[in-house]
Length: 291
Ligand SMILES: Cc1cc2nc3c(=O)[nH]c(=O)nc-3n(C[C@H](O)[C@H](O)[C@H](O)COP(=O)(O)O)c2cc1C
Image (cartoon, rainbow, N blue to C red; front, side, top):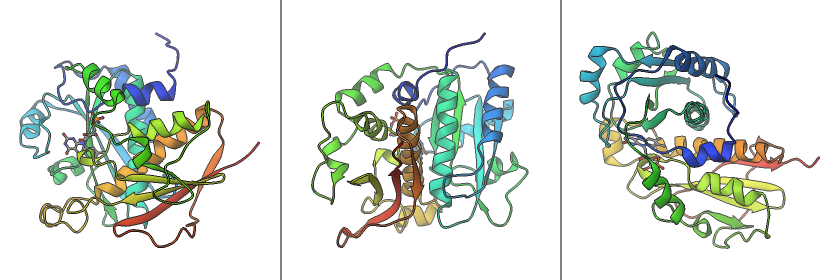
C-alpha cells in the first residue's frame, strides 16, 4: 500500500521511547524498508562512517533482552537496530545523527523505538554486525517493534511542557543567558521545537543553541555528575552519551529546517562569545544559506 509521506515535524512529535512491544515481529516489508534506509545513510554530517544492521529478534534474544541492564525496562522488543561507528573526533555526534534519522524512518512506518545506551551486552549485539573492527565503537543500540503501549499521554505531557526544559533555558540570542525571542511566525520556532522534544539520555536535554545572525551555534552543556568522567559511566564503560544527544539534536534541527525550505550546512566555526561556563563545549554550527 502506498501511503503519503508524513511531515518530519509530525514524526518528531509522534516519536516517544516505546518500552513495551507486541509479540508480532516486524513484517518482511518493514524489515526491507528499514534496512534500505540503514544502508543508504552511513556517513554522518562530520564524515564519520558507520554501519548498521536490523537484527530481528530470534527466540533466544527474548531471554537475552531480559538480561539487558538498560535503565528502563524494555518488554518484548522484536527487533534491534545495531550499529558501529569508526572512531573520529565527532564519531558520537555522527552516530546520534544517523541513528535518530533511522528512528524517524521507523516512526514513519508506525514502529515503536527506544534508544538503549545504558549497559547492554555489547558483544552480543556486535555479533549481529559480524563483530567490531578495532577502530569501531558501538555507543548505543535501539529496540524496535510494534508498539504495545500507547505513547499518547507521554506525548501530551511533553507538549504541555512537563518532561522538557522550556525554550528559554535552551535557545539564546548572541550569548548564553539571553533567551532567544523569535518574531511572530518565524519558521525557526518549529525547528527549535523539534530540538526541544528530541530524546536524550536520561532525558537530560544537554543541547544549547546560540543564534548569531544566520548562524546557529550548538553547544553541549554537560550535566554535572552524569556522563563522561562520572564514576558510574567509567565503571560501566558507557559511551559519552551526551555527545550522542547533540547528534540527535542536530538531526532534528536539520531535517525540520530543510522541510521548511530553510537551507543551510554544518560547519565547525566556534564563535567568540566570551568564556564558556564550566562543562559547556562547542559542538558545531548550522549556517543558514540564503537563496
Ligand atoms: C543516547 C540515549 C540513550 C538512552 N538510553 C536509554 C536506556 O538505556 N534505557 C531506556 O529505557 N531509555 C533510554 N533512553 C531514552 C530516554 O530516557 C528518553 O529519550 C527520554 O527520557 C525522553 O523521553 P521520550 O523519548 O519518551 O520523549 C536513551 C535516550 C538516548 C538519546
